[in-house]
Picture (spheres, one colour):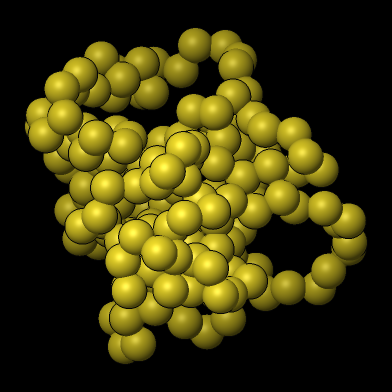
Length: 167
């Protein structure tokens, strides 16, 4: 498992508009789908990213304080999203971000040197003061069975709009 910290502005397309990863609503069209998505065609901080040319950088450490358990699993039509209760945080560069939700991409949304991973999890946080989003992306590869993930996956709703509570 590898981690990719994307703790700036999140490249998340407007949730009120139908978007996809291909075709007429794919990434190359996100900026035109809704005015709120303008950065998707005009900026350099949008998804999907192809991470290339790794360097040894001196960046602030990421502090993670996530609490175990609880939340609501939602099939939002694009992915499975788990909305979490208050109390979990991520700290970076003197700023604290509250964990709102995490969701999955299979295969990964982002690439490393042009290659995808079997899965990527985005942990979406929000700064209380500025409202800025901080997203921690984690690349996943198959490995030994993880009972916690298996119990979570067992309640993933199969229909769009479906919900389930997790303890």
